[in-house]
Image (cartoon, rainbow, N blue to C red; front, side, top):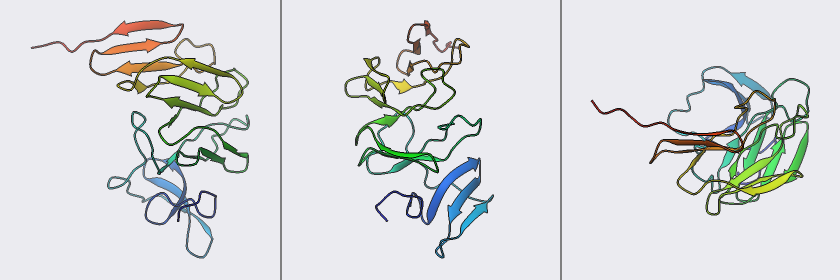
Length: 178
């Protein structure tokens, strides 16, 4: 299947609607019935890691997109820029080489749709901001690093051990040689 929707979100072999925890999944069987499975093995095929583009694959990105205190199942498909958040919204934001970086960037209690474009270092958060921070060799690490309930933009640079959190800190961690 090559379309994304809750009835056709085929990410692996079969249709996966979202992961609940390690080895657990919510999926739809061939009869269209939603099922819970706690024995799913993702070791052979898994979504693209955060430090590489998704390309045509869909990436699962859970978060609290409606502010009800519970994570919602979300899918980002880079080939079309589609974000599909089950029961909340469908929006087009981002592109083929973008990495999804959702988080509560404005402290409203809801996850915001965001992407990182490694070729240019662009961070774009839908309806909020566009800024440049990082490069193609960086791993994106958004999170609340200063405890203010706002997602901070951050990168980790594996080659040097640099952790850089925008407007918070820069820390260089190097491996000790024995």
